[in-house]
Image: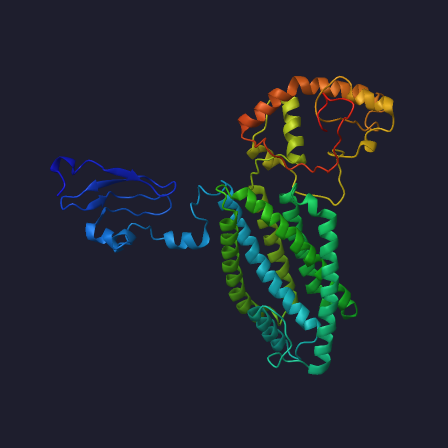
Length: 448
């Protein structure tokens, strides 16, 4: 039996994640009793008691009454330790990402309907709707007796040749895009994520329009498939980069797995709505096209809100340019939230700025005299070069010397401002090539 003087004195306090703490008391009969537990998102309160014999058996049933009503649902779809185990922007990003995934699922159903119509599935529009629903439910397109074809043998050959052309075009495009832009996806993950989703809308629009021009049907669908393969590379790579940003407890696998669960749930909801929507739009192509444009607008808007909600604390070229400009103009360092809100979200295939890091030496100079001018007067482990076309009235080494003087004066203050504002300065997302130089005749010079 517990001492009467200690009945009202808490034995300990505990809390789950960032939830409110609760006290543990000794009850009069020797059992443990917990005080009411309040949660932030739902109302759950009430003291409960665990008998000593319950503890001996492992998981006691009374402990289950302490779990909030939504805890099971949260455990299924959110990472363990949420919200402390993920970045602060996780929830708004995932909410808007779910909206865009739902809109994309419905748009994809309309595009699937158009493609099946274009390759000759069924004589009646009802057959096209049934074939579309079958494809959506199965997740793959296999010509069989379940689909109604006007000419089964001919249509089977058409589908086989059609799929072969799609596959070859898509595989080639996937390889070329990964080689061309793969190293840039980390640096501008938000921009390429938005680009991938807009390109996916373009691909589905081509599929919607393909049956209208039967002569160009094959080339239109192959172009659409090429775009979708680029989407798969850019979208998958940038999603991995964003997952790494969101994971705050070395739990990238858990965050990725729960994101997959959320996406599956959204796609299932989209599938159910598609099965109800297709019979309504199959008899009216104009209404189908109007629904597609509405869903595409919703998809793009949700994607914009999703990437705009992200607050990445590492500097890429765009964020560094904004922070530097603000620092030079006002002497203050922008915080991650402000810089991310101001960061442009459109990326081009061709660079518009002239910042290049890790370039070969011949890109900097072609003469011994110019090299000596670039090296002279500083011991930093890098060389600077200024594009003479930007300031033709000054010599390159004069600009470089002035730049070093400004850096020596302002950089310590700038670096401290970055750290105080919450930026992660131990790493960056600047695009850097692999060229480095070692000065053999100058031991005091560090490796460049």
